Image (cartoon, rainbow, N blue to C red; front, side):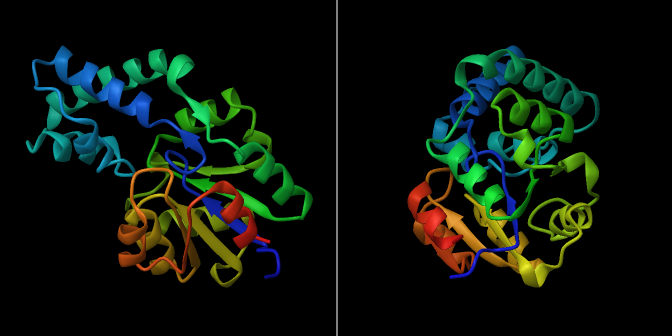
Length: 217
């Protein structure tokens, strides 16, 4: 298959192994606010949804106003503190991004994180230079699975959906890419499994970084 001219990646669970960091940070946040801790499964299920919604979904309680703002502030502080120990690239991702760049693929990130935090994470892990356009939840008015994040990323990359593949580890990423009219590839090393990604409509599913690299050649 010919090289894909444009590739839009999700961040957490796709490029960055942050699930441990997310689980630790979420449960530290809940404990700090007198809320029950949740299982890894309960938390990971909602990875890819912005904090403004995911904290409520994890707890099964709708948080609003000052309570929600306080939870988010606590979570972000906990995440930054945990990042040095728990945040890392998935094996092979650095080489994949370098190889795609050498092939001329234009790349960006569409994430449910705030843009500044996503850029900070990518810079910390040494791959920001490969990903010149990063669109976070604070840069759109409609979150995943709405296609706005794809459209905003393509504005920065000066590309078209017909030339683009969206790569992500959740059904929200796949639904977003499909809604934008892009080819979609699900990856199984993050939050959602093969069956869930295919049910969301993934054109292809990769079970390893090597398999993803083959699909992007």
